[in-house]
Image: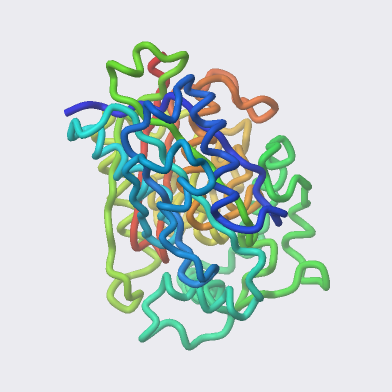
Length: 389
């Protein structure tokens, strides 16, 4: 089996884009990613696209749209993947399987979403497609309402942690100030994030606006190559491990506070890599809501169940802490264009390992963890990345 390496990337600015659709968003990153890898479109053997869509646009067949925006890629075999908020990682894993199977030597992975042109109520209903509608779509607040119920359950079991959630939000906003690709490059204080106000209203249950990731447009791309091809490239970021674990779609079928699928994905990736969390220099994790980041601290093993607040209080996940979490600003401040998210997270980690993260750069970053999930910890993807060259 051929090991896939990341040999190039490109990342657009997340936010409210003037670009009209995913065709334009994907075109914005496709050619720059190939240029970064130092290869031409004619060398790409497979194209793997992650776009949720699900009603954001009447135009679907998203894999074929890449060739419309970049005609030089129109003849490349292309496929589109969807796996809720883990859509980007699903596309990445499919590309890696393509290379591992020897079906191609170079693959281009693109994740994208155009969300901000969709009216709020319609957008909320589209996102509810990532839950088990039969049981979970009836509450207020859309998908935020689902995580609000998770937060309420957590508070009932372990005490009110609203202040720690505010501290997570403030940490990620502070980190995003240094990220030129972030939707919101503005620091927010823990006090502001913790207070309900006209500028920071309650969205659902105990979750305030600052507890929720931003609705964003954007795209990101990765170029993958097999080991032999990567050996001749300017850079190569390898996968020490990758894992994918699923949990039941229905929250009623599991203890949602256990985030068991996330726990299993992390355990599998760390075991494959032969490392522990103490060996990692950073983690990019899926903070679609601040309560998700708190639960992920516990799922990855930074804290025991119910003790995630200690990671916050002790500064473990801060930029200068023992294990910086979301030094890019995370979904919370970098933005969360659904299909682009998993690809973006891997780009952010690769930039750190290559020493190309600019003002975001962490000193000595050599090993990174990435965790991307679809739905409420249903589809869980974990990677351990390292620089090979």
